[in-house]
Amino acid sequence: MRVISGRVWYRGRLDPLSVGIDEDGKIAAVRKTLRADESIDHGDALILPGAVDLHVHMREPGLTHKEDFASGTRSAAIGGVTTIAEMPNTVPPVTTADALDGKASALKGRGAVDYALYAAPRSGEAVVRLRKATAFKAYMAPSTGDLQVRPPELESILRESETNRKLVVVHAEDPAKFRARKVVSLADHAEARPKEAETSALALLARVRGNARIHVAHVTSREGLDSLPSGASCEASPLHLFLDTSRTLGTQGKVNPPLRSPADREALWDAFRNGRIDAVASDHAPHTLEEKEAAFDEAPAGAPGVATSFPLLMRRSRAGDLDLGRVVAAMASRPAEILGVPKGAIEVGRDADLIAVDPRRVDTIRAKRLRYKCGWTPFEGMEGCFPTAVYLRGEAVIEDGEPAAEGRGRLLAPST
Ligand code: DOR
Ligand code: ZN
Image (spheres, rainbow, N blue to C red):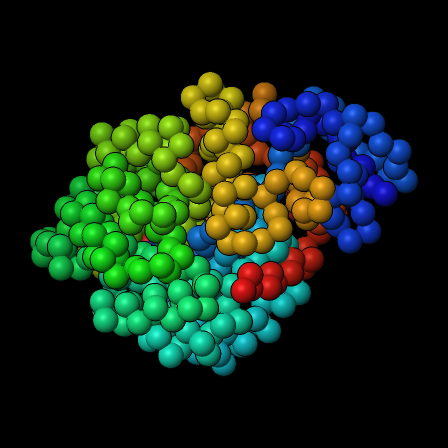
């Protein structure tokens, strides 16, 4: 047995413990002391469950000039993310069983971390054909990839997903509430796709969701949280938790749904701190600097983030602004539960996906360190606590903060 020790997050608190890992990379025991063939002692560093990011766009196949599966998952590991759920707006889009199979074979053996694949059914019938997907994504508004579904299709997708017990992740913006205007700044973009678009889409979703399992992607406002359909889970992105329209980011801060005002961001942060947001997901959506250099209204929406979510939250926790339990819940245990994968907690029987992090080591975020193919981050210059080591099913994928192994990531089976 291999053993990893440190101050372990176990049963809701930190204790000096050892985690025993079996041949299959599963947690076999958690004790004060454990005898081992191989033992790695992280001393005072915290040992936390690896993060599960429910929302990433790794751009493969078809858009690999922006990112590819090897580079994107390497960055994930650098930021303590050991499981990603990959969005379907690649090229070709994952709307058919062929595209899903094609994507699964293209990615095989190339990921540094474990992964789930979303498909985007365009109709109720497609739900059955796409059953091999881990979960579904439904866009209620246009964004990168042109996968919007209209209310009648959305309703039929939800009905079929309900029957098949599939999770549907919803991009909730109602285009009927968009305002035609000249968009040259982050504030203009926020007005062009206002908060009312979010609340209106959520109200519509509440009317049609029935008993479908739904998860609302990137909620941006307190009003949005107040409009969540009952029983729906939700995520917020560090984009909306840490950045707002007061930043001088230009097109680098252009994302859908848009960054909001400082007051909205603070309200979202308070709601998160108080436990009203299930998961923090990056919405890692890289575009090249060249693409982002276009005029504001022409520039593509999206920004990279898979490597900075955990370090940013860990930094806030270290500053006393966020309970460590919230970090673990939002980055690991809740998203694992939502996706239905045996990850996200240090518990016997779960996969031994672990992060070792010393919160006293605070770094300034620099794009170079994150290794994104696009080479930039909207969080440049902010502070983060990065993991020193990351383990995927018991094997190191990051050592001394650097990539140590690649290609070990596995596709996770659908939970149904
Ligand atoms: O900002 C965004 N970028 N929002 C989306 O919905 C899609 C994403 C992308 O893929 O670029
Ligand atoms: Zn997205």
